[in-house]
Amino acid sequence: MGHPVLTGSLPSGPHGGPLLAAEYFGGGDPANLWNSDLSGAAAELEQMKQDGFNAVGLVVPWGEFQEHLTPPRYNEAAFVRLRGLVALAARLGMKVILRLSYQLDVDPYDQLPYQRFASVFASGPVHAAWLEYISRIHQAVERFPNVEVAYLTWEDFWVPVQIAQAASTLAEREQLAVTLGFRSWLRTRYSLGKVARLYRTPFHSWSEVPTPPNATPPFKLVYQYVDWSLIHKLFIPAAKRFPGLNLEARVDVDALYNEGRIVGSYSHQSTYRLPGAKYVGLYYSPYMMDPSSAKIETAQEALDGLKSTLTSMRARAGGKSLYIFEFEFVSNSPEVASAPALPANQVGPFLEQSAPILRAYTRGYALWVYRDYALSPLYNPSFALASRGWSLAGGARAEPDASGGGSATIPTGGSVTQPLVVSDLVTPPGAQNLVVSLSAGASNSAATMRISVGNLPPRVVTVSGPSRSYQVTLPLAAVLSGPPTQPLTLAVTNGTAVVNQVEASAFTQLGDVYGVDGTPGIAAPAIRALNQEMTAPRAPLTPLSR
Image 1 (cartoon, rainbow, N blue to C red):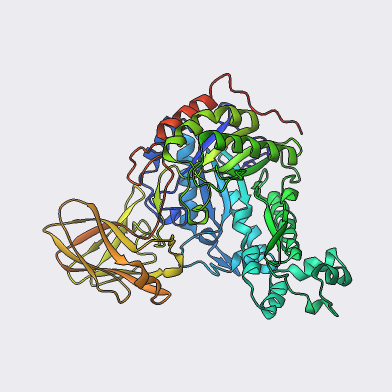
Image 2 (image 1 turned 90 degrees about the horizontal axis):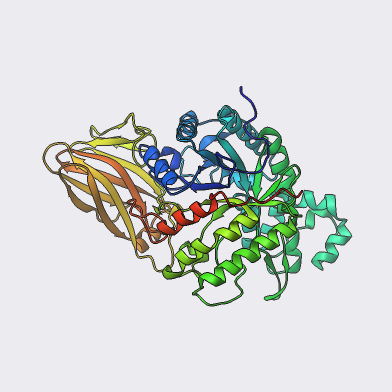
């Protein structure tokens, strides 16, 4: 055991300036970082340093690190890799930001992968397991003084709201009132008569009280419950186990409806003043604070929105300092595809002119998409964990290597197979293809490989020479209309192929800084200029006012 890793002080870079971070997702994406190829970590972190970043962000999925809940059981390989990356950052003189309890993972050994983030609100054993997970992560990194920040985010605990919004029948809502812990919380805050008046529905006993319908004013009670839980049930007890913990708060307000009309809004301001926290975490994207319905946004409009957002947040947080945990100046995510966005020719001016605003209001920022990534639901895509998650047949073998990657050797008649969970695919509107990509080579002469998903006709590729990239496309509609889980198989019919990366994706997340292959994007020069301006000696840091 070492000293507590964090003190709760304001975030700062290695020399006391602003903390400027970029997220690292290994050879995969946020959901499979810890089982992906980590052999390129040193080079990518070095590139971050050259671009002016002094910290690296790492997501720490609850489900992958604590695979089993009752009783708790841990994935020790993930902990080894976590300590390895934190130590690497320390050797490079970089600090580390940890996003704890990240919701997404593709670990096939994750118990309750789609249920644990709802169960933690009301299930005693699940809540206790989650707190033990927080303690184990702290124990794993407490000896590393370069771990500067650890935080939770509202986004990973938004599941109860989503479930309550989707409930369409009274029976579903009555059940949810129990399973989400909503009714028990409601009883501590209101009398049954008060609830009946809020719902405008007579109730004879608490057993009749459901979660409110989504499109009605009393749905604000669900928001209140989740915000209260986020602070009192999650953040406060977790901060006792991980000193210095912070929270990324929800900036956007949520509309309240009545008969299809917006009749008000709900602000999550109660989460801005956390007990013991000296600063407030938030996120930012140019569409925020933009009242226009125009698809195209100018750099000046985005700058005005940035200043407005930060001014409002600091005022509502009682003057506390701010830190932007997710700075997304561009995003092609399906969730915000219809929101105002910066066109390519406005990205550079926005970034280059945002430094004075960021210096005045924040302690720095973390960039979510430093390198574009294809979202693929495959686990252990580079065989860095040997055959874990894969079924091998016909003499195929999988081996990790010392650098953090791995490979599968598939001889004639051999194959490797992994179940593809169709619901884990991100499928933006208009997407037509599922792209299966692999890096492979042939150990001797050319090898013939058949790539198949489910019952679709296989695609055939000829693998030859040293390792290089291959792609095949499959009709996405046929995959989505098939069984919920379908086998993805690489089978060699002639020769011997060596495969060291496999992806299956219908969507690539773009950030405009570096492409999937590492090619600099349009925003790379502006990011360097922004970071240089942020760390210039004249750049003042936000004073701690409260």
